[in-house]
Image (cartoon, rainbow, N blue to C red; front, side, top):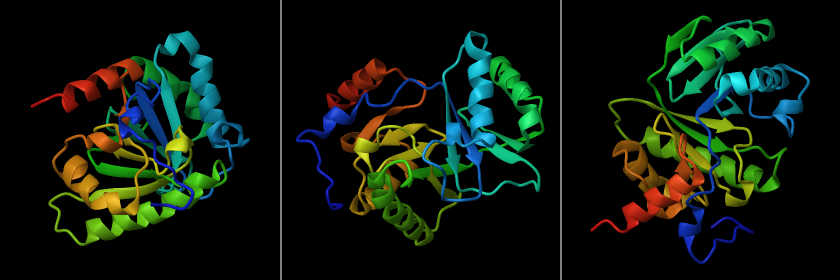
Length: 231
């Protein structure tokens, strides 16, 4: 267990701790250090969040924006990974963000993009936002990378450090995409069984499961209850 990490008596309380997000957009920033609030960074992250907010009711979707350490493919702008659509926008610059908001609303990309069918493990390591995530996250990311490297996988799985995802009290926070399942209170000792259950088999590891992209907290609790009562 991590120092100062206190688990609740019943980890079932984790279910339903993910807000409803219908889409998750990752900025491929190419770095692992971000300001405490990327939506106030005075740079691309802020411009992106504001462009989505400006779309308002017209967007009719709740979009989560997170930065990750994956590199962009272009020398200018930032690649953006969008889930659950499975798109990688290529080299987006600030002037294109109003068009991006239109794309999100329409559900059809017009900006330069490519399909992305990769498997990802995102680990919150955002120490500038919360010291607990900064403490819990890096050892988790390292253990995931080591465990995956030791396995002969037919398809590669990418491990990425991310900025704040929400719920730092549940650190270590791990998100597995494209399935969209969020996990909390994950320690390095949990990594092998999380890989086996959630990554390789595509099942939910119930004792660490916080919720899923696209579900309301109530739906997350209902799904957890249904699965735990299954014979």
